[in-house]
Length: 462
Image (cartoon, rainbow, N blue to C red; front, side, top):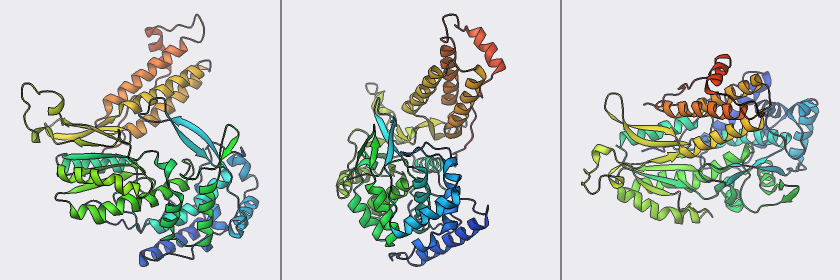
């Protein structure tokens, strides 16, 4: 059964041998992880003393330097001008309790599959990002010893593509059967602060860490010059938000399903979760229905609700395992369903050898959103030199291929490539009244400025 305990005994956060300070931090992280493994049920009370100036230097090194600025508009380069002075000041304020978590600057991005709806993103200040990273490094070392294999989101050495591979493997292995799509309504906006504190305290009772987490939860949100103080939720954007979400859902969903639900089911069942996106694959329909009936009650206990339209039970049985359709019912009910996860639609199809396999293609809403972004960019920057536009569009295409370039998804990538060329041609032709570009002229331009063809970077076949 999927979901046994995941024991991470390796080095945390990737390569850590760049500086002598990084080596020291690596040793401390291994020490914390060893303590957490040896005391799996204990609440750890002495953790913050590991956060010293070397720890903050390493946290600074791991913090992205090209992100958007927070409410103070301070850039990473500006902070680095007096790096040692700033880090010593930050350490003193964190230890003394005088650190004040600044409000996050809220922006909105399009929400996948939600039409004109947007998703709020909170942008912390650069210094706040560094301190959040320092605390996340401690929390990861502790909780990676408890998190289960069914969880993939925002964890060291785990990725969305691994989650997709897990879904493909389990659905093929079980001939599809029944898939429960789980969508938690506005999870990051409704996460209960009191319950989160209670869950964290079961494992971490270090005063400094708890104080900092509490300050981040209470930090205001600045939007259009006005600061508000939400009583629930954790702003998406800071690096502390994903691990707090994982800690919360580890208890709410992962452990509950693995320890209490799965052993009571008749058939096999596998949970796969990436942050707040999850699916459960069931061998038996009655098991799936039982879990669907009880899941809302479980989430309500933790102040969470299921999205009534996006949470659904999908008949995903392999086509040759389904009853043959009658002449009057040869369409919808006779075909296997599809489901979406992490930007991909999963569906049954024949392989080149004629075998039934689960394939994954770019979901329609993700494709439309990506095309809209490129089209809007072409419109805004149509007066830039062609070489500048070409360079930017190459990066956008390669970024799209880097995530969506998985086995079996070439046609969707080619469609995206073709439509990007179309959008570029349209907006180049609107730079002036005489700027219209024919198809032949566009072909000549692409000969000089070729856009990269689709490439499949990742094989998910198991």
